[in-house]
Image (cartoon, rainbow, N blue to C red; front, side, top):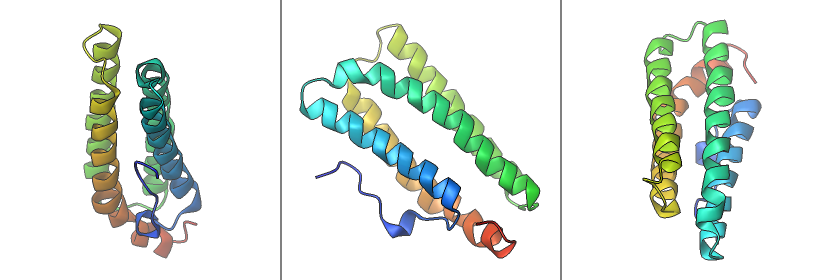
Length: 135
């Protein structure tokens, strides 16, 4: 059983963005699987590095589409991305300083953020962007 199951409810209707969201779900489940096999601490650094890369590419993808289609909620959404990016960098710094050693803390944070961000924030732009022709 996966820690976080992808559901159709999470789809924003734009393949590229849905695939990126699925990739984050996979990353989260990989961390969870590693924890259950006793290798969570070993995998945590890799997961955090992938999370940094994810925030850069995924947020840039979303924001580019929002700008292209003049999404009215762009500024607010970008601000939420900035906040998450800062949080991710802070997590990496804490991990590198030895202040975070528990993969449970990271996995619970990611699961909570991902479900809330997709269902509340990202789902808001889905109908607007697909209505403008984004696929």
